[in-house]
Image (cartoon, rainbow, N blue to C red):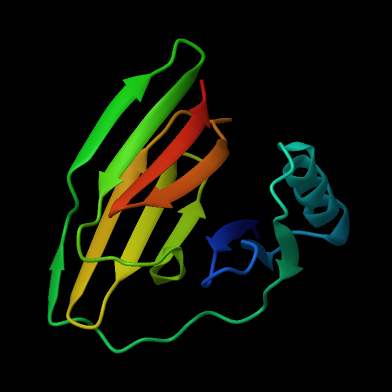
Length: 141
């Protein structure tokens, strides 16, 4: 049997961003603690890491589309930018990292965006930022 984890970063209003780590399957406390420690090594941004055991439930949107994606590099990292023009807040975005892909889902009241981005094994998300309808993911190479 296998297992895995998902990391969701959300921010509401003026509050500090929160990171939810959800584990499933055969992921034990040691691995979860290791993930939390890695996140704590990132530059300090007053991000609170909290445990999550439930998925957000939503009504399916009327329309779902694939967002426009651009790939760039800064020489060290891969920079992936997704255009999510109707999304207003990071709390409307779910990011799940899998072994060889990243799944991004964003939902508004009337529209949904879903994108699966293929990545090499051992790639990790170093940083995620959302501003003015654009989600930027910084990945190690």
